Amino acid sequence: MWFVEAGTAPLLWNAGDVELEEGSSLAGIEQLPPDLPLGYHWLIPHDGWPPVRLVVTPKRCPKATRRWGVAAQLYAARSSHSWGIGDLGDLQRLARAVDGFVLSSPLHGGPPVAPMQSSPYYSSSRLFRDVLLLDVAAVARAEPGADVVAEVVAKAAQAGQALNARRLIDRDEVLTHKMAALEALYRAVAPRLDVSADFASYRRDAGEPLQHFASYCALAEEHGRSWTRWPVKLRRPGTAEVAAALEPQRDRAQFHQWCQWQLDRQLRAAGAAGHGVVGDLAVGFDPSGFDAWLFQEELALQARIGAPPDGFNTAGQDWGLPPFVPWKLRAVRYEPFIQTLRAGFRHMQGLRIDHVLGLFRLYVIPNGHSAIEGTYVRYPHDDLFDLLALEATRAGALVLGEDLGTVEPEVPITLAQRQVIGSTVTIFEDEGPAFYPEQKLATLTTHDLPTVAGAWTGVDQEHRIRLGLSGPSDGFEVDQFAERLAAAAGVDRGTPVDELIVASHRALAESPAMLVAATLDDLVGSTDPPNIPGTLDEWPNWRLALPVVVDGLATHPLAVRVLSALHEARPQEGPLSTPTDRYRATDVDRRDSALGGADQLLDRGPSGAGG
Image: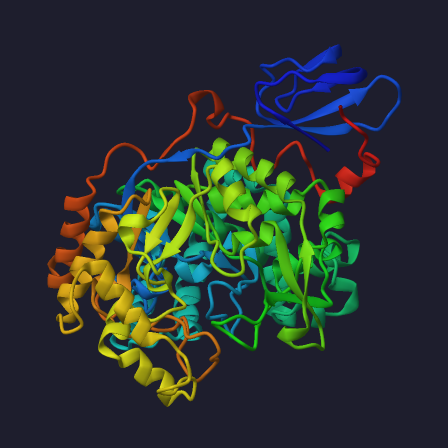
């Protein structure tokens, strides 16, 4: 591979032809032209060296504008229309209800097979969406002919909406009701899908990965979620054995493609609502899930990633996610990474990269060892950031990087050079919001930390003591968190919690940070964190709905005050990002790209030197 900055004109070692991504070619050139378009091209040397993948990149991601928004755990953001879990219809309602952007939790999915995974950061696939996020009523409204199964949909809706009475989200029960309605709707519309130009266009855009995903879902329904426990002959995608096993299930596979099409349509509508949606790309995926099945040749399945011991977690962290092998990833010209970025940017105005430090190095733990026995493995971060800048520019979307943790000195320098917005969290900062760096997303807390109300009132400390995670003198810094919140807001420790929440968000909005965000939990004064690291079943991680429906935010007293404070201190102006017009997305098919599949890439021979 050869990465070239757009606008430069490097000399070639020898003459060659350039086959451009859009189909035309430049013959017999000895120097690259400075106006070579962004994208993935081929350089064919005349002296017989193997073809070189020529990547023309802008090097920098689109620049962010000074904005504010809200951070939402989408599953928890239920409305009065929900079926027991927040969905893409609720994301659209939320985007319209607030005057800022919405930073959503990951929308990654997997097979609709119980038991469903609770954590949005431990999904089966980062390439496709979670079917639980479908607004089924919206599907019924959008599909001609759906009225013939109106009774089935109405019955499922009644059962699904009854789940809203419970604060604890039961994904398996949600799945039962949504699948009953979706299967009925699919049967009603299936005869017309062959002549649906929109469905055909989506399948063409999604390409071979969609076919594999539908195959995986159909096989998982028969053999279970974990491909590592399937019959050996089915453990590799695209084989004759897999095709033979799927022959009786061709319609079922099409059903899963249809569900992903519906998700794509609803995500497009949500992304166009309000001030836009910023997605979240998890750092990895389930080793027994779809992405691991698809990319198994490039993974180290005998290891997991995590974090080394530090002051926040002295035992280290094991996230149970398999790492890519760096040289194998480059050998297939980063196709898994590129596909993942495109899926993450699709219909989004921005993308948050969870644990962006993983583009530099990952803490890898061999199977059979504890989290204190891992080691760092380095990744070709220059290549990865070149690809990130190219895909972000084509999408016209900004990039945020979650850079909390053990950070090497080169990380903030690289993020600044690449125009990637880093992270700053008030309850970790010794200095107040007035001193926050400009290239940051500033928040008071995160989904892995106490909520503002939880830290201020001491309720979070009570949770942790009850769970055996924290005692009055074990070093957990809840009191220090509260002190930092007080200092940031300019209030004393006796201030009522609602006053603190409003004042601290106003101070956040007045900071130099390019982006600021309030969590939905803090908007409504919740004391319960979405996730408590170090717990499994002891705390309902990723299963707590907000105590307020999102279509009630407009009349919720605290939410109204916080949103007003954000708006007054930081009026919204212009788009969320400002890419250069020259580098905006083209009509080139982005998903079924000229890169092709991994087998096709390797068939072209080893990489040759470019220049």
